[in-house]
Figure 1: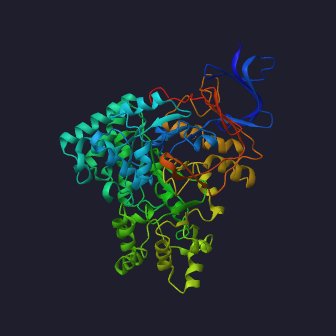
Figure 2: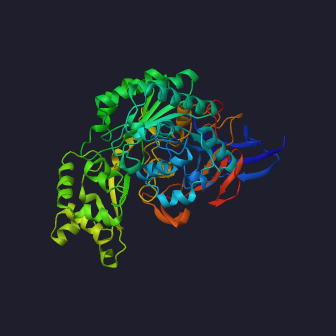
Figure 3: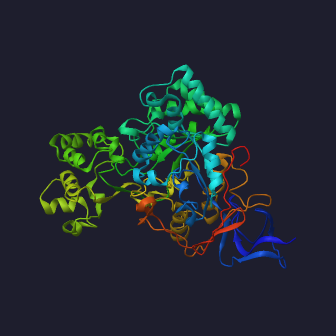
Length: 561
């Protein structure tokens, strides 16, 4: 047989956790056909993978590329890191279904929850759909470098049926029935389940709670039963009002989803907290029974660093006093931030922190636009406050105001003590993900988690074996979502590969800014090292960091994945 692609002399790590082997891999028509010693075989293209690891393409379980796929057909930066499949539509926020008159509402939901600038969405989103099946079909028409899996974000479904009322109340019986019908329609079209949020910081249009947060228990039961009826799909929820803690109401919600859907649930998030070092292990112990039934918490393998811009106060909006700052002009925001009452309320809120804890010693000035303030770049707020003879909270706000709210701050929210990350990523009760690819574009970029895992925790610190690490980012997320054709290297399965040099693979903790969004918008990206080839459905997408132009990715169908 003449092959389309032959990968020779590689160290094959098949994604199951089995020991690596030295072997060749042959591909025909986008499918793996042989793995073994294939001397003398002919192929249209041959890749010499000597000294390289040949692994299944990585499967990212948590992204927000819902808008970006309209203008970026390679889905960067995930594609640079060996990711070949992404799951979108997480945390209850998305772009379909959407009536033409509601596009601004949907866009502002993404602005406030996922920190994607409105101007970028206005210029970049194509809106060549209305229904959810239309949205998937539009993605297939455009073509993609990566495989795309779609979750049904519950907010646009409720808004499509209920309009403004979706942000005010629960659905009545007629509305509930229609949302349920639309979810069933989306599942029939190939969606992988639905997502929602219970997180207080998830505010949408005009600073109001995301529509999915107003869904009643009766609604959630009905939506969950759609998955039980079709016998596939999963549920994703941004759950914890306090990171790494699950309260009684949140536990009840997980119980509801598991019982009514009979399907797996993934919830956010487990992250090490400096203010409560035992939170993760306590929560894992308290939710073990739910985890055994399929409620899997997501974690990250990196320090969780957030770049804060007070003009777009996403994480700060978990505090009620910050909600009025959302979606205002810079002039009005400055007026609020100067107010003694606002500052008093901010101080009071920090006495019972949920996400932002006000640890000013781990907040540094990343970037200032005012030349007079550039001297503070790289310094933490406590040091600057001491130098200025002021309180750290006041210093934080004053610095932002003095820079016309353009100043960027780095804040280590979670996983600050990297020595404690292995307990998260080696625990079989967790799923590694939480990349948020495509979201918080000027604040977070954890889309390089796969290369960070391999470079930092396999090569540099030997916290886990190569085989175990690859399994955690390939077959484990694929199995969770029921993606049977990917996540492993085996004859008959899709030819998705990440081929990398274990001696150099990795990514940095902090990213770099680029002005490459529609209209010249800024985004933070994480570049990769050591990924020599990203191959999707048998075609080379990236070779040595260069885009080949191939667009062999597919819109995945949950019944045929």
